[in-house]
Length: 363
Ligand code: FA5
Image 1 (tube, protein in one colour):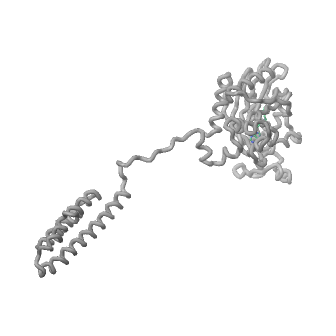
Image 2 (image 1 turned 180 degrees about the vertical axis):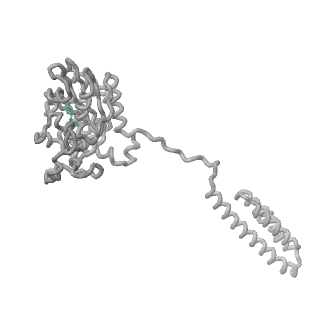
Image 3 (image 1 turned 90 degrees about the horizontal axis):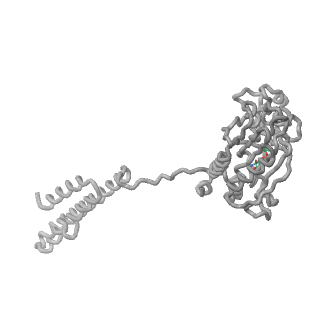
């Protein structure tokens, strides 16, 4: 075996045994580097007689080319392997921590404030409600004009329970008389339009005095805009006792707003009409976006309505099983989306449910 052959075998063996690009580079330098074994053979050619040079020269060049291409191939394979294999020494990917949705933050703050004022938090209530609890027991009998204030998603009842379909008021009015004949105790089914049905449900099974808040999801079949959603939240409040009056309500609400906004805000209390309270009131907050000048959030009025309220109507107390001569109460329903919009200066209610992470990640 001549010297070239010896060097070739030795180099190929080392190349085959190398398991990482760094050691392969060491082998390349050992054979093909400036003082490498093959390079030295090529240099020594200059001292050989011409005849020998003609024989040895091409052999040494061929050896250099062969080793070079074997090393290049091997390097490619080693790099591919490195990228596909799990490298436990590489730093791990940072996992982003989850956080609360802005609505959850505001709802939690509202609940904490009422808890600290000795209100009990009552969980939920059914989102699919009967017309008895959503309307009748709240002093809104069928054909009462106040039902028009609630654009209702009705559940069609001429179908079997698991094939129920949603209809809206307009489709409902068009016909489908059969669905008007209720087959359900408590009347037809609907997606509740407010959390007030929980007033009746709670009164039916509890004795006064009590003070509760009930957060929940509600639904209205109405066009959406910067301050209206079809699926939104309300927090219902009900306080009943022997001498509960409007000044109790006013104190509690002013305390609530000043703790929630932690700064002075301009509020407005004005008379309003809800069949389940008498007298009825509405709380409005000066629009924080335009400072009362008028914009798309407040529909150019300068004010945003955040809460309906009032003293519980005697008929509602009766529907809950109480004697209105013995007990009185106040109730209100507040919209956390509207509160969150004012607190965080959010220009459009639809951003809460849009699923845009650029928005959500700011909280
Ligand atoms: C009611 O729903 C009454 N049940 C509130 C009430 C309870 C009055 C107890 C008296 C006693 P209203 O429709 O105004 O009222 O809604 C109450 C609040 O829900 C509003 O002030 C507003 O903050 C919020 N809200 C109403 N409609 C929407 C909507 N489409 N999108 C987002 N928030 C809404």
